[in-house]
Length: 76
Image (cartoon, rainbow, N blue to C red; front, side):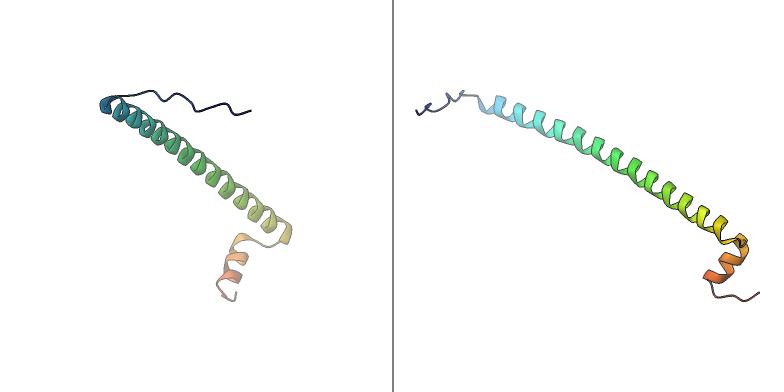
């Protein structure tokens, strides 16, 4: 059974503009929040990578200087 069309409120142009500005402001706030969360996740990922690298260095039994020399192809 059809429900029919929704009644559309007739808003003035000024009201429409205000609604649009409100939506833009909400979207901006949401974007800022998402960017903050992204930075936090990037920092956590970087920290996990550092921890993983540090554990690998410890497990290798080599000194940090030896590992750095190996990365750059320098012989001791």
